[in-house]
Structure formats: C-alpha cells, structure tokens
Image (cartoon, rainbow, N blue to C red; front, top):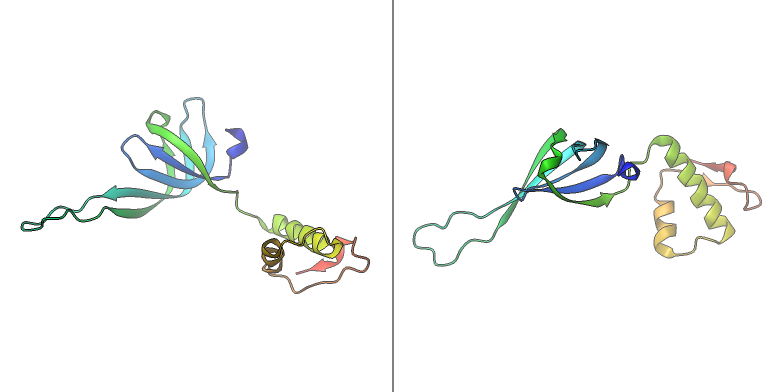
Length: 136
C-alpha cells in the first residue's frame, strides 16, 4: 500500500459506488484519504407508465474533492494512473527522453511521439550522450 501513495486509484465501496482519486494516506484499518476525488454511480431510470422496455443504466459522475473513506466500506481497489508529474520530474523526463532519442534507444513511434509532446523547444545534444543540453 505504501508504494501506491500519490497514485490515482479507483476504489469500489460496498454500496456499489466507485470513487476515483489520488491516494494521499491510509492506515491499518484501510481508511483512505483521496484527493481530487470523483464519485461514479450507476442509476437505473424509473420506468414510465406505458413503457415496455426498461431504460438503460446511466452512470452519474459527481466531483467530491478531498475525501476520507472508512476502510470498512472498501470492497476493491485498482490503479487508474501514475502519480502526477511535478515540474522537476518533467524536466528530468524531458532530459531522459532527449537522451534516449539521440542515442537511438527510444525508437518506438508512440513513445517518441509522447516525448516530443513535452513543452520544450529543442534538444541540442552535442555528442548524443549529454542530456543536460536539452532545453524546454
């Protein structure tokens, strides 16, 4: 659990709702603190008189923000995404991408495209081994 701190998780609780948010903390009772939390629940619309078919289920989304979730209600958890990238991490990621592209290590088109999508102007690496010259 400690390795999932700051990761974006989807937590299903015992009444069927799913909560998605960034896990900030937990304790031995599995109580969770989720930031930027959103609640998703499935609702079946009521059948109107005269209708033969039941309307399809709808998923309703509600933004909650910071949530403290009692561990007793947790049924399951799954990872939705990695921790958010902070500015220092972005700079390092750009340098690593730049280095890998110039060394020829990174040649998968989808990965190269994701590296080039970073907000940086150019990559001026003299010998291909110096990632410190990558600029944003």
